[in-house]
Image (cartoon, rainbow, N blue to C red):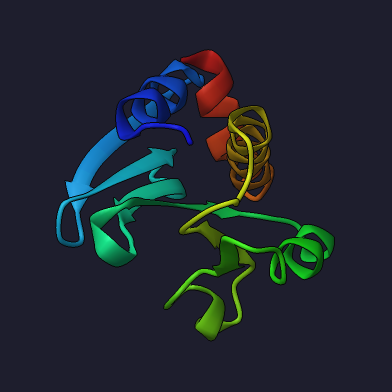
Length: 120
């Protein structure tokens, strides 16, 4: 399973991301001030990875072992998944979902915010 350090390195490599530690020591990754990925403590002290998904991916992933609708976020009607245990996703699939989450958040930004991202 992806380590917290590998998660942070991957998210840091995406364009124009920022990192904060909040919510009880969770690593929270944002683009243009909007959250796209979270690594926090799961059950038993293991890392839990949380990311935004499309409605279809939410339906598919929600019932897979080691994955669940993200606590707090999904209960508010948001389409976020948390990988909290085994078997979950392989590292490559998790990285793909993190990249897709980033893309979903960027796509949801205003035209002005997206333009500012592109300008640097």
